[in-house]
Length: 120
Image (cartoon, rainbow, N blue to C red; front, side):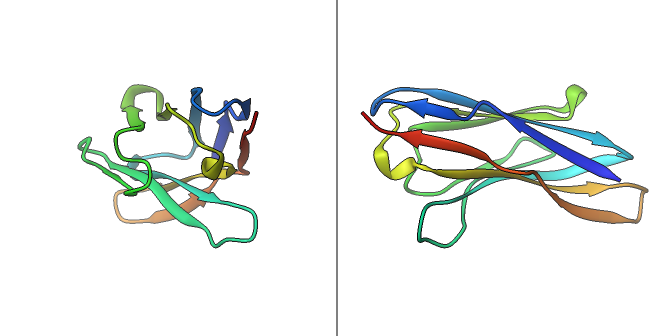
C-alpha cells in the first residue's frame, strides 16, 4: 500500500502565504506524477498543479505566478508554495500521486485533504 500525508493547511489573510507538503510512503518503486487538486465549497474538484518525475510542472491559470510546485524525489515529497492568496483559493486541497509499486504495476493514490481558508 501507498499513503500520502498532507500538511500545512490553515487560516491565512488575503495576500498571505502558506506552504503545503505531501509525503508519500509505503511500497514505492517510483513515482510518476504528483499533483495538487482542490475542491472549493459548492464547486467541483479542480487541478491546481502537477509535476512529473522529470520536474515538468503545469499550473491552473488561476494560480500561475502565485503558486510554485516543487518536488524532492529523495524524500518522495512535494511542496506547494502559495503566495498572494485570495479568498477564492479557499478550498480543501488534496494531494494526488501515480505511483509504481513494481516496474509494471501502478496505483493512483489520494491524500486525506487539508483545508486552506483565506479570510480576513
